[in-house]
Length: 635
Image 1 (cartoon, one colour):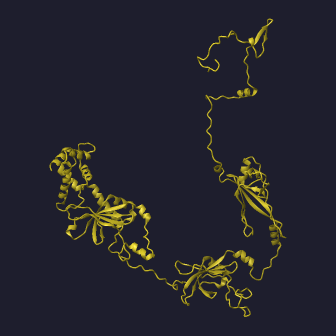
Image 2 (image 1 turned 90 degrees about the vertical axis):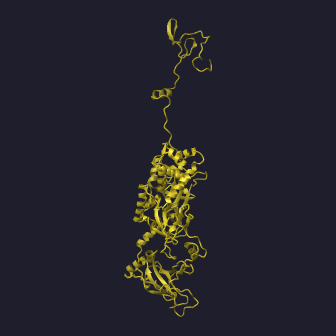
C-alpha cells in the first residue's frame, strides 16, 4: 500500500492487524482509573495531539477566511515605466558658492563666486553653471558640463542623497558650499526621508563690498570737460546712422555710389560702409573707412610736424567730427571724399530732436541724380519653338528649360475639360464637321479631335496637337492665351485662323465650374447649366443637327452592323438579346438597345437609338426577343 494514491480501489485491509480497540487516556491500576502517558496509549499506540507552534496558533486565531474558494485574485501589476521616462526633465537645483584665491593683489585675497548646481535625476548627472555678470572680466557660464562626477578614488559617484544644505561637495578638487535650494528640490528630498537643513545666506565678496563703501564715501568733483566714464556708461551700443552718397562724377568714370555712415557715440568714432546691389560692378568690400576718429581737416597741422609721420595724435589734430557736424542735406568731406547726407534712421532723428532740438528731417531726393542703368531689351519673337523656350536664350548664356508651375500640375493632374464644337467656315463642306475640344487644366494646352465620319470625304482624327493657343487680338511680344473662362456655350474660339463655335460640353465641365465658381463668370456657368440641364430633362431631343438624309444613312449603317452579328448561327441572335437583358424580363427598352450599340462600338446618339427602336418594334420601350429575331431575319 506504500506509494499508492489514496483513491477508491487502492485501500486494502491489513491481514496482520489483530488489535481493533480504540486507544484511551485512562487505565485502571489496582482498581483505580489513572491517566496514561499523554502521548502513548494502551498498547503503545501514539495519541494524536496538536503539534502547532504558538505563532501558527496566533495566525489561525487572527485569520479571516474569504467567501471565495481557492486563492484570491491578485491585483494586476502596474505598467513598467523606465527610469529615463519617469525622471525626465526632473532636476534638483542647489545654490552654492566657492572661494577663489587671488594672488599678488593688495586689494583682495579671495573672491566669492556663486554657482548653481543642477542634479538630473534621469541619469544622476551633474552640471555646475555660474551666472553671467556683465563686465566681470572672468570667463563665466558653464563651469562643469553635464556628467556623472566621481566622489572618491574607489569609483563611487555623487548621488542626490549626498546633498544637503550647509554641506560641502568636492568636484574635481574644488570645494562648493551648498547654502540653499529651490522649493521643488526641498519637497523632493523631504519626500525621500531626508531632513533638509535650514537655508543659509551667500557671503558677500569683500572686494565688491569695499568698492561700494568707497564709492559712497568718495567725493566727486565735476570735471571741466565731458566725463568719458559717463559717456561710456550712457552711450554704449548707441549708434547714429546716416544714409549718404559719394558724388564722384567729376572724375573720369566716376559715378554716384550709396554709403552708410555709422557714428558711435561711445567714443566719437565713425565708419563708412558701402551699399552694394546686385551686379553693380564694384568690389565686394563693405567697409570704405574703418572705425576711427576722423579729423575735420587732416592737413591743418603745424609746419614743424615731420611729413614722414602718417599717424596723427591728439596733439596735432584738435578738431574731430562730432554729431553736430552731420545733418540732412549737408555735404561732409571725409579724407577728401564728399558725402551728401540725404536721410537717417529713426533713432538718429530722436537723438537730434532731444539734444539739438531739430525737427525738420525731410530727406533729399537723389534718385534723379543717380545714373540710370541700361535696361535689357528682349528681342521680338522669331517664331522658332515656343515663346518661353526662345526667351530663355535671352535670360542666360546657357539656355535653361522654362520653369513650370508644379503645384498647378499636381492639383489639376488628369483634369480635362471637353467641349463639343463645330467649324464656322463659309465652305459648305465644313458646315457639318464636328470637333471635340479638350482643355488640359494642368498646363493650359488645347487638343482638337475630329471624330471620323464614313463617306464624308474628310479624314478624321487629331486636328490639333497639344499646344497653347494664343488669342487673335494678342501680340507676339505679349501673347494672351485662352483660358478655361473663355469656353462657354456659343463662344467663338479662333485657333490658327480656324474659327470654332462651342455647342456643348460634358457634365464634368459644369461640375468643375460650379466647384470653382469664383474663377468663372456667372453667365458662363448659366449657359452650361441651361444646355446640360435641358439635355438631361429631354432624352429624346436630338443633340445634333443632321443634314438631310444623314440620319437615315447613319441608322442604316447601324442596322447593317447589327445584322452581321446573326449571320453565323441562330443562337447568336439570342445571345445578343440576353447580353443586355440582365434581369431576364423577356424584353428590353431603348436604354438596353443603347448599351447593345455601345458594346459593339456603334453610334448611340438619342436620335439614332429612337429611330432604330421604332424600326425594330412598334413599342420602343418593350422590345421582345421575337422582335429581335424578326429584325435580324429581315436583312
